[in-house]
Amino acid sequence: MGVPLLLLLLLAFSVARADEGAFIGVNIGTALSSMPSPTQVVALLKSQQIHHIRLYDADPAMLAALSNSNIRVTVSVPNDQILAVGQSNSTAANWITRNVVAHLPSVNITAVAVGSEILTSLPHASPVLFSAIRFIHSALVAANLDRQIKVSTPHSSSIILDSFPPSQAFFNRTWEPILSPILKFLQSTDSYFMLNVYPYYDYMQSNGVVPLDYALFRPLPPTKEAVDANTLLHYTNVFDAVVDAAYFAMAYLNVTNLPVVVMESGWPHKGDANEPDATTDNANTYNSNLIRHVLNNTGTPKHPGIPVSTYIYELYDEDERPGAMSERFWGLFNGNGVPAYTLHLTGSGVVLANDTTNETYCIAKDGADEKMLQAALDWACGQGKVDCSVLQQGQSCYDPDTVNWHASYAFNAYYHKMGMTVGSCYFNGVADITTTDPSHDTCKFPGSNGKNGTFPNGTSLAPSTNSSAETSNARQDYGTAAIIQFMGLLLLSNLLLL
Ligand SMILES: *[C@@H]1O[C@H](CO)[C@@H](O)[C@H](O)[C@H]1NC(C)=O
Ligand SMILES: *[C@@H]1O[C@H](CO)[C@@H](O)[C@H](O)[C@H]1NC(C)=O
Ligand SMILES: *[C@@H]1O[C@H](CO)[C@@H](O)[C@H](O)[C@H]1NC(C)=O
Ligand SMILES: *[C@@H]1O[C@H](CO)[C@@H](O)[C@H](O)[C@H]1NC(C)=O
Ligand SMILES: *[C@@H]1O[C@H](CO)[C@@H](O)[C@H](O)[C@H]1NC(C)=O
Ligand SMILES: *[C@@H]1O[C@H](CO)[C@@H](O)[C@H](O)[C@H]1NC(C)=O
Ligand SMILES: *[C@@H]1O[C@H](CO)[C@@H](O)[C@H](O)[C@H]1NC(C)=O
Ligand SMILES: *[C@@H]1O[C@H](CO)[C@@H](O)[C@H](O)[C@H]1NC(C)=O
Ligand SMILES: *[C@@H]1O[C@H](CO)[C@@H](O)[C@H](O)[C@H]1NC(C)=O
Ligand SMILES: CC(=O)N[C@H]1CO[C@H](CO)[C@@H](O)[C@@H]1O
Image 1 (cartoon, rainbow, N blue to C red):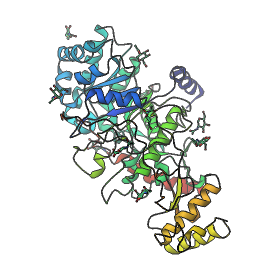
Image 2 (spheres, rainbow, N blue to C red):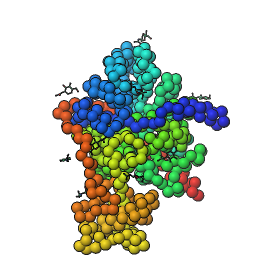
Image 3 (cartoon, rainbow, N blue to C red):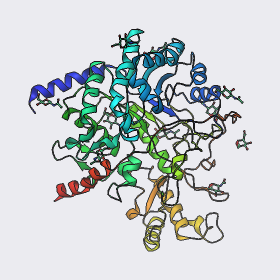
Image 4 (spheres, helix red, strand yellow):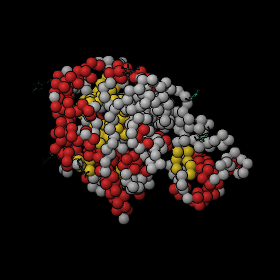
């Protein structure tokens, strides 16, 4: 590509750059057997300083509770209304009157999401997706609201094929005839591309090709960093690679200045036996790192410094969602408003309050080889100069008397002695960082404040007796695209190593 195009890109993006920085929002799914009342939801949002939310519908009670709250709201045309809205401009106009205009100006509605992953989850409605977007937009124009309220439609990242290296990504050609006019329309209406990004599924479906650390934004050894051979851009996490794949796929259709907003991203904190990486630690690590990454306005390798605002999936665990156990445990909170974990956000500004801890611990990896653990334990208590006297029989940390436990104590003591620096929790790969305090009654791990990782009782919403739960937040399609792409990833980095 020549210099002029590059310049054009820079110019185009300088518009986005001039805006305020990126924000973090939260999705509110409502498939809870005991859904908190709208007032309780808003109380939680306020206490956690969440200023941006996305609803999967335009529930009038919820919108009423959001009045004068200083919370920016994306409302959604639910999937089951897309056909009606896309086939009749008067239905679309009525939708806007009832679900948007009626709540202005007391509710700050900033966007309308038209459907959720329509191309992949409701393909038979895709022929009317563009007209649904246009009709909704026309209704906003007629109400003189089109400048303050953006219209777009969220997509699954599975519509992007070959997304590693990102520079070779393109949209599934099946959808090109539908996507191309939509993208041009979004561009001409100063809107943005709504994308759902799930490194969890990319990781899960890659059969070990995508390293967990790469999905979790953890530092990688330089030899494991993924390099796009075409652009020489370095990718240190899956999230950036997927967002850049979207930029490249759009550029392939000649759309070069449409910002990306990530409408869903997160990590489940609990899962079935065959979902071993749906853990509290991983969920905490992913979401904490994601928030830091987004709020830092780091941008992506292709567009450094360009904000990528992101909505976390999701506020509450939705116990009524069907499917694998992990489906029900994406929440930052349970239905009572009790946090699933305390995010580690120190130093990244105020989003999600109660970020009081910096606590991380270094422990023996589950299932690590005992001989390697023993060797590492011996090293820590010897050359590593950790005081291992509490591990002697009869001492406070002797029980349980397993290599794994003793190694965990010694690894953690060493890690804290070294100031928790990167690399001080390695031990030949048998150690891992956790945010859960491993301490027990008699044995306090270095770095523990004695709270054992429990959340200080603060915000606790009483359960509502009103259970009305029917949403269609669709995340079912995370597709094979990303997986195939990431297969190439290690190959590529191996090649570069040769
Ligand atoms: C719907 O479209 C028709 C024909 O294009 C137009 O005459 C009418 O004004 C539109 N109605 C609304 C509510 O936009
Ligand atoms: C609504 O949100 C927009 C976008 O963040 C902001 O610019 C505007 O000031 C807000 N309006 C009110 C009344 O808070
Ligand atoms: C492209 O999309 C079509 C329609 O959903 C699907 O049948 C096909 O498998 C997709 N192609 C790839 C390579 O994923
Ligand atoms: C993109 O632009 C090129 C050059 O102007 C043109 O050949 C190509 O058909 C365009 N592609 C699309 C999808 O608009
Ligand atoms: C924050 O952004 C700067 C560049 O603006 C970058 O050098 C730094 O690594 C980023 N920090 C994190 C934690 O992403
Ligand atoms: C958390 O860690 C950062 C950097 O390691 C440090 O600057 C900060 O003081 C710590 N905060 C607390 C509450 O320990
Ligand atoms: C700390 O948490 C672990 C795991 O949940 C538990 O087994 C242990 O009893 C707790 N210790 C204290 C002091 O609460
Ligand atoms: C904290 O919450 C637990 C469970 O929700 C409750 O049993 C306990 O009494 C609470 N403690 C305080 C000090 O509120
Ligand atoms: C439940 O909430 C809905 C609206 O959110 C309301 O119409 C209904 O009356 C409520 N039911 C009870 C039992 O409170
Ligand atoms: C914003 C905020 O500080 N929220 C809660 C954090 O936790 C304490 C209790 O530990 C609550 O009092 C706060 O309301």
